[in-house]
Image (cartoon, rainbow, N blue to C red):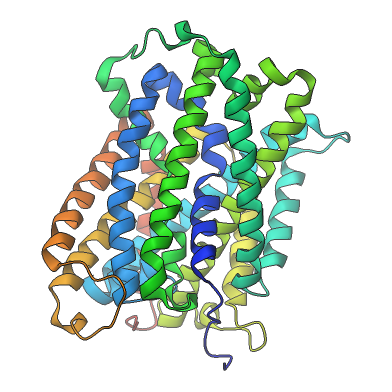
Length: 432
């Protein structure tokens, strides 16, 4: 294969590993506390509600990946189906969201790992070291990173299952009362925070050019990933609430605090190991996708063309990956308020989901897709119904987030204005 093409090294097992590993990451170790402060034990209901939109989004991503596979798909699809301006706007906002996601991952990992290290290490030093390792692992090919992710994800599922099994013996029924201290209003307000638990399942779909037999493997791969993730989350959240009760709302490291009840001094090592594996696999997914949409923007001409270059030997977007690494290091020096970061990640993500849902509807109604051979081709009417529900879900989640914290919206508004200037002085209309 020539150096002008990305290497097709991702198979169905890698799709599952990327989806599960990216989702079972930073959120489960950090988000239960903020969610409990909003909804109380009723965060379990919020969790189920948050899972429904992700099922809709995954269906549409599988469809789009089958009929129009692309790496950097969240830039390519809106550009292809909705116009260059829309494609740029969504991808531009995701730059802030992706940097926030990287900082979020590093900050949560530091909270779990730094206190139990045998040597003194600052949070920032740990984050920079982690970013460096992932950069070196990914620069030589997505296939290598995906294989490592598959092994790490398997270990993570085993550890979280063991955590839940041990916690069951220490649950207290009274910890679930009052179940919904702020009523259904609180349940809804927690959804924008918890929806981040499921984002990342679709990451492999955004690397369509690098997946072998994408039309046949993408749909079952995403379905398996969702089933695994939902099952693990429900069990872990249920047992954590049962062990901690009201203290969960103020916990900085909920799973660690719960594990101390039944593991004592060994809790730090156990949860630290699980958190490290979990956050590394999730962060790896963010690195992969962030670099791919920067690559797609460079290849199209809307950002510097160097971002769209492919390494002649490794067949990876090495320049885009290097830019992601540099932005990650810069992000390590920014404040790491977790609620702020969770929302800063989720807002561009919800806009991305809504936009790509519109793309799926357009693709289903377009005659240009009728001659594409694919293993996953639902009826156009089904795509339209699912797409409409997905759009409504994404917009509602984004709007509900304004009540939790308005600051991420202000940051994104300013970044959007900068994007308008960049678009005004772009070199040419993007071509994808």
